[in-house]
Length: 133
Image (cartoon, rainbow, N blue to C red; front, side, top):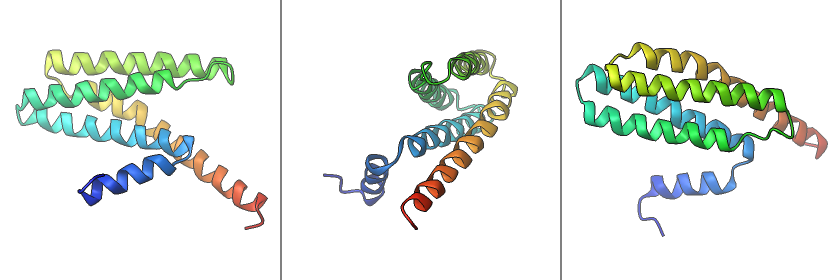
């Protein structure tokens, strides 16, 4: 078991989260890594930036594999294209050491995170109403 209370909390949070909450957590982790990698590039900590961008790249891959084209083919295709484009932006940011690519990725992904969070909140309210709460 985890001795670190923060890790235990995170583990419990992930294990008890709804699919929508997990999606928002992925976006939060992705956006956090983009912010941290931008700061690392600005501070010329290139190794740290590379590590963070690699992690962000992995999260984008996870988001890509979570797409369900059966539910909404057009949405899945649009999100897949967006995620692939953002992966390219991360690669450019590291190759060129230029944070403008990270800014663009954040501008594209930030509103999606907010939309998913709002959708999850609406679903929870509907569930509570359905249960009589």
